[in-house]
Image (cartoon, rainbow, N blue to C red):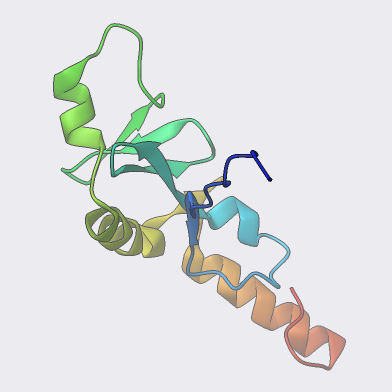
Length: 119
């Protein structure tokens, strides 16, 4: 008789980006929708910024000294978190470069190399 408990498996993270994964810089432009328990998700950028319901980024995943009010503004059901991440993704900038800049640089590299875009 097998007495081992049955493992639980659940998806806990989604990646949202407007920059294709074959782009060399794609990881920099990614947003992560991460499960935080109790059916709630956070939208995270670079592991240290958290998107609020108002569309602004807050430093810290759960800043010290902030409690239920902060969590209520930064935790969402999955559909809401994905919607917010998709709305924010086109506006990600990295070191002053926009998503549009990253896509244009990818296209220029592809043209220079004479083949399909490979990042």
